[in-house]
Length: 372
Image (cartoon, rainbow, N blue to C red; front, side):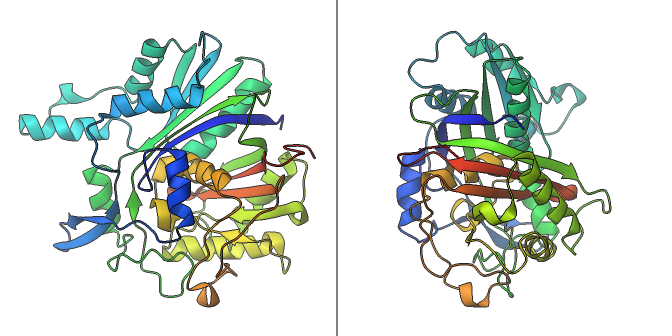
């Protein structure tokens, strides 16, 4: 794969309204305190990591993050493609409309790419499209953006990922017993009891050249759908192993060169077992340092491929340890991790429906930033 650069990034999550605030909150070590919603199926509360109580609308927040990712000298955007990655898309709008009008009617339906079209017109992007591939949506957005740049179709690509888990998503995950009753988000813990949904908006600007202060170089990646099951991936880890190996091959690197693996780590039974098995197949006994980020962001579904990637890149000098590391299925660190500048990173995103993706990135810090 032809490498591209993440030139700038923007993030609004449960950790704070911007990427720097999120980094400071992460370094404190304590995950944010979740709010809750009522799971109708069981008439019981379930935790939820939402954004701070601001007056921003979805459109205002998208505009703000696009502006932050483009930077002060965005200029004419007729050379820039917009990719919008999400699983919620316009579902929240439909739910609000139904609530106001007392029911759903066929004319309420809107094209799933309506938001992307509106943003394209408002900002003057060359074109726009949407991606909805479950938890890999934003990761696939980065990979598709890289392909477009390599093909010379655009000079820049703006990837915008957002997730505001809709009422139907919250109730659906809860009804499947995938949300944590305890509110303790513990990926790879033997007694993990599910995920905590989280809200996030994230954006990054991709280009063939690094710009003034790039976040990282995207060296390679791979995405594929495991068709062996309608909802999950193979628990023996074989498909996940294959995806990671193909990602490494596309980046021209090997497992032994990876300085950190950012695990997907949903804290659901089948997904954690599959990822544990896959990681051991790919790396054998020589596992690099491992980290998980969902306890701090929540599971941001279609946005996690970008929200977690940006948070990872912002905090490579201080990634929090897990207080249950000695009990985990994989050898997580019990103390904060500091990753060497210029390290190669493998970021995993393994989603509902068996859609699996891995990204290979190189951090752009230190005197020899992004030089191999």
